[in-house]
Structure formats: structure tokens, C-alpha cells
Length: 91
Image (tube, rainbow, N blue to C red):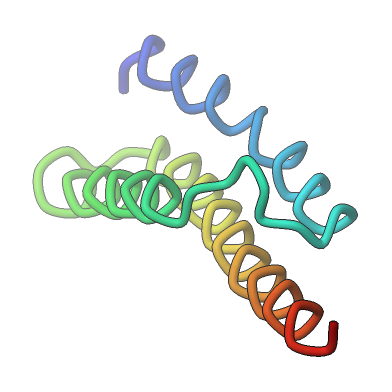
């Protein structure tokens, strides 16, 4: 277990609750990129797989927590995009 890996995951993880809150409250996709969110999600999945297959330790829980938060942000992006499309159609 590396203290630097833990610090990295804690720092990245600290930003996601704010991003989720902003996505939820704004109901907008402005300033968001689905591609970016998916790349980050795949990165966390890769980190989890590395921990499972090569170096299992408790840091896997930080990867999992961060992946879940990014997943929530992705779902909110999809919701907000649908709402934006519906709003445009209705005029």
C-alpha cells in the first residue's frame, strides 16, 4: 500500500461530491464531458482490476468509492442531457 496512491485517490475523490451536487442541482450538462467521465470511470475500473489481480490491498475501497461517484455523475449527465433535449423539443 502506497501513501502516495492513497493521497491521490483521496484528492481525486474529494472533487466528485461537488461535481455530483452541481450536476444534480443545475440539471445541465454545460461544462461536462461524457467522454471525460467515461475515461475516468475506465481508469478507476483498471485500478480496481490491478488491485484484484496483482496487488490486493485496502486501497481498492478508495478506487471503488471513486468509481461509484463517477458512475453517479455519469447517470446524472445522462439524466440532464435527456432533460435538456426534452426542454428543447417542448420549446
